[in-house]
Length: 418
Image (cartoon, rainbow, N blue to C red; front, side, top):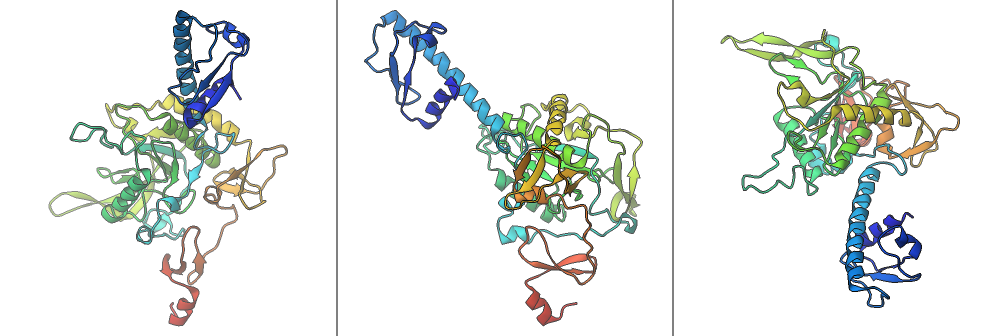
């Protein structure tokens, strides 16, 4: 254990620590004390035991000053280590992605979800349910840092933030007010760095996080939406949020084979039809659209605010891209497995691929994090099938190209539903 780590533990646990300090240590530091001189600390505001020997008043003051500097250094180092190691799997920088069930934790919230059948095609004039990702778009929720009273908002840029409650409110707003079928973002990161799974459906599910009303263009197609629970207009993200964002971007880039330092190969959007009313106003006809390829080239990793002219923001995209790109190289060397399953997988091109790399380290993930990626073998679903979906309690009937929730197979058979 490093010397300063012992101090960090003493400070964090407030336990009594007896520290034997040799003359060799202090010859390199502040004072040259006799062998065996010791101090007893009972808390962070440590008091020295009166059994100290051979110390004059001036030496004592100097020693206390040196110890204070030492403690400050230890605290800073300890907090930095915590920030770097939290929200990642042990001894790696692979991000821990918490299950959606952590915030979708009651029947009322579960019933809001409208599960979509993957089979819908763009040729029907309706936006595809699934589409390969070619970009990652980062958002913040532009929360109010200060309350009307002038005090700081505990739910904005604060470790007092109640992330789960905020996510639940966003979910309700998206479904009940915006009429989305689910929460619009794929992943959400709290100020403390926790990463939450957002939209249900796994990898390549199309979100609802970037729509331009004036042009009727939906940039959510072919993009992954990441929401930061923060306001980065004037303040930088916390160290934990920054680290988690770097790791999540790297994880998604690795899993979907994205080069986050390059421009997206094809900037594809969903173009809804524009309809003119009798009064001359235009509105977007969202059941009549098509896939549109734009001539412009945008980076594969975008911060939403950077697209707004003259916008101010405190997220360093250059550093984010550089750090995440280096992490992608690390993550590509690993194989992955679930906690109670011996099967080992590689994650590539958006899928789980059962393939072994000789000498590769195996990382055990939370089940939801590996299940987010389906196997490359397609599952064929047909009209009238009964299916059980990951993370859902009830059984669903495939009916009229959508999922109809039923309570059980027995009720289905009793009622002779069709």
